[in-house]
Image (tube, rainbow over all chains, first blue to last red; front, side, top):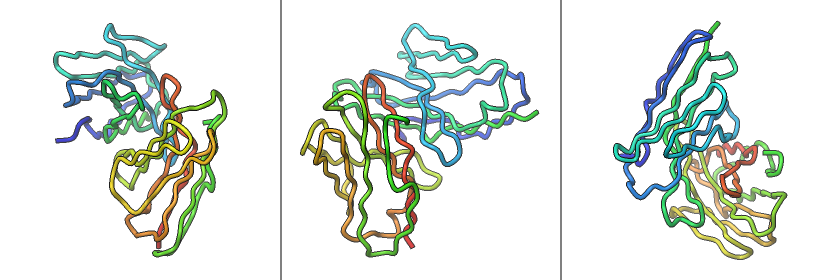
Length: 112
Length: 109
């Protein structure tokens, strides 16, 4: 079983749509959580950290459910520029060196 | 990625040839540095990390090695490349969160 599992998609949505991605993780000792986005043939870029109380950054909302070991990302009012692969990422407790564990990614395509 | 530099951007090497990829970072001193690899159609895999000069830890056994000769320099090497070494190599730096350099796309032929 993979440590971080995501639905690979692809998700194809029209501009303006709301889309949600889910992610589950198996390591209950995971301490920190992130969403990264990766454009084709580019490096991953941090989209947002995910906090226990949930957090929002503009059109993006992230939620964490520690009991269910589940993370979500909601994108509202999708833009063409949101087309990318979204990576769910965890970091374990006690890993002071900061090891990140990545999901395989969910592909999003926003069309006109 | 503007504070993390990697070169070369792309590289095509024959099987059995040596490899040297370089990463340099700007910003705070003594950063934690990382090498990741992303093989085609697969997720990112941590290869090495370093918490200081000369301190290297390996996450997976392989024919690659890493070195950190200076505080802000991290090098990935191989004496003899394998076909399976092809992939997208990313250097990362950790402040509170991790940030990635632009990557080196390596094709072993």
